[in-house]
Length: 214
Image (cartoon, rainbow, N blue to C red):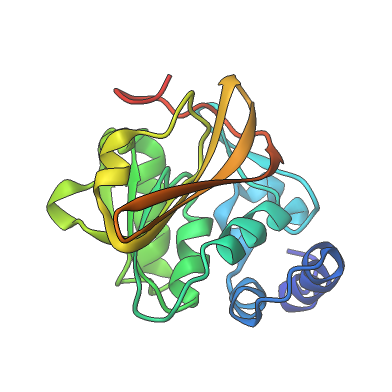
């Protein structure tokens, strides 16, 4: 890149994330650390820190930096937590969660994206991120339960298998909507067997495809 990635990352964190009210220091540190430009195609690397999503191929995108920060902040991650991500995509969100000290398990259904993310995790020494090629709407039952589950695509409802794979207490964050690419970001918390759902605002994500999605 012609730019200094570290300087541009700092600008991204200050102007796009902290300025919008996200003050979770773990999130800010992680997003200062992860080289976001490496998670997009070389032709788009100059745009890697801009305030919008970018295409990564196969009809998928890398989310706007603010949305990654917002979802990571809502998750209330503590070091050592076991987190399941549905929709590896570029791998950027998983890398941010790993930088926050989480034990990350991530599932992707599109094989070329899965292979590309695995290769990048290896190159960037995120050897402790576990990856799986599968229908993410069914979760990763053999590795459950999870303290947190994050879904990075929008579905018509919350997949029941994911709820069943939460610890108690636990939390799931997912975009949900009855129209594609326009959803509400839902935070589901499970405490003592009781489920609470909170609307965290409007978002627009690619479709959650699978048995329990679109």
